[in-house]
Image (cartoon, rainbow, N blue to C red; front, top):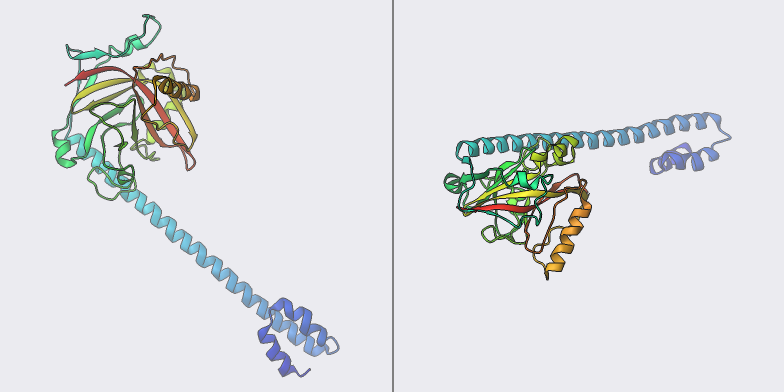
Length: 313
């Protein structure tokens, strides 16, 4: 075969094909075989260079994308801190002692001195003036405070559970989102299960510090086992009865129940999941509060508490 013909053929063959096709044809001609071997090496190097270049481009693109994500996260975090500072400057929160309007909700039948419930109901409620907050965001529905965490924020509500996943308190786009009440809930006339969500930010904002509930120090401090809420109509105190993280599910987000038995079965399921035993009693007249956030990409952090004291404003 003429070398020119082989040159043409070489252009259309992959390096591994040349080994199988061209070289056997030239095995009698050592000089030509050496020439083609050099050309094969060059061609293989060319392919390797292309592959290396493509890998470099992919890595470069990944670095740019990661850098953009980190920068965007940082910007959103800074904006969240500004929002928190603005809120602190525009809110009046005070502790209030019990009054004639204070109601102890479904107390235990027997007064056990070792039951921390009797200490909890002596705790002061918080009362929040929402006038300035409502001027900033008319979706404001209440204020949430969780002992032993950084959670001390107003919460909002709109017509779905997606809007505030990517909006801050000013309703501007922010991947940090905000703390929001389930759209199905009525904060004025409490449902059997009131649900509040937020992102679990790694910088501790929103519900990022809710993971504290799995730490021994958090559990050993009994004062942490309460949640305080304030709304435009009442102030309430809730006793924690279950904390856990679980593969993502919606079975703890039920709001309505077909019967008292159905509700008590639901509560017992939540108690059984708890990392700790809080020894909290229930009856069919109780109401519960659920806080939910992300533990990781596949799991949720959940806290449940039951209503033990309320005061109408």
